[in-house]
Length: 165
Image (cartoon, rainbow, N blue to C red; front, side, top):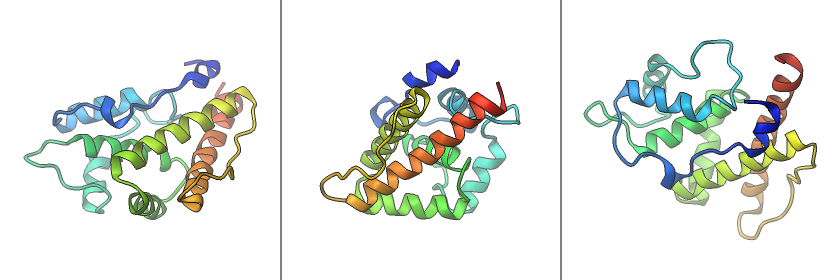
C-alpha cells in the first residue's frame, strides 16, 4: 500500500470481525490480512502460531476453546500486534486492562480502531492530531488512547517514508 493509501487505512470494527470461531492457521491468515498495511515487519509474517501460543501462556489472551479462537481473540491480537511495535508486553497488558475498566471490550476495541485510524490519517496527511482534546467522561483514558495511537502512527510514518522506501 502506498503511503497515501494509509490516509484511508481501516481496521475492522468489532461487528466486522468474523463471528465464527477459527482454527490457529485461519487466525494467523486473517490477522496478516488485517495488519499487513500498517505493520512494517522484517519477518515474512506479522504473527506466528508460536507467538499466539506464547500470548496464551502469558495470559494476554484467553486459551482457545476446543482449539478454536473467537472474535475476542481476533480483536485482542490485532491490538497486541499493533502495540507490540512500540510497547512491551507488560505495558500492553496494562493498557488493555485500563481500557476494559472504562468500557466494554467491544467498545474499547472500536475506540482503539478509530483513534488509530485517525492518528495514521492525520500523520500521513501532515495534519496535527490533537492528542489532548477533551472528551466527556474518561478524559484521562481518552487522552491516553489518543497518545498511544499517535505514538504508533509516528513510528509507522518514519518507517514508511524514511527507513523503508
